[in-house]
Length: 152
Image (cartoon, rainbow, N blue to C red; front, top):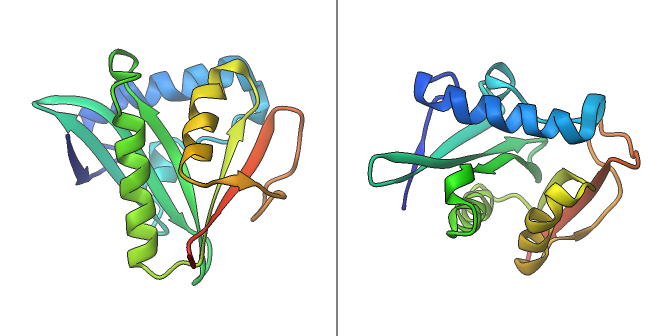
């Protein structure tokens, strides 16, 4: 797999990003917190695509919250690539980049629907634990919050 820093507004990202947003909204409604291409283009966000051969198989992003804290944003494996290690590859890439940048903590917000169970399992497998809402998030029955201490 090849992970590249990329442009979330690139035409080849549009279909997968639209699928990501539509799927999240279908299970979370107004509680979906995923960023669209405009939000992923913010200067505080770094966006990567994951490629296998010439196929886009996923994406993920890292958002700086402050000098010591960052957030995993909008991780997604393409439907045909689920279960192939794409999510693990992009998550490891994001964690490594967060450590390289010197963040002490990496957090994320995800859903509570059955759709999110594989992602939650992945996050727990690399050491994320439950935490309180962070940044501007508000707790609801539709979301949960996790954090990874990078100081280890």
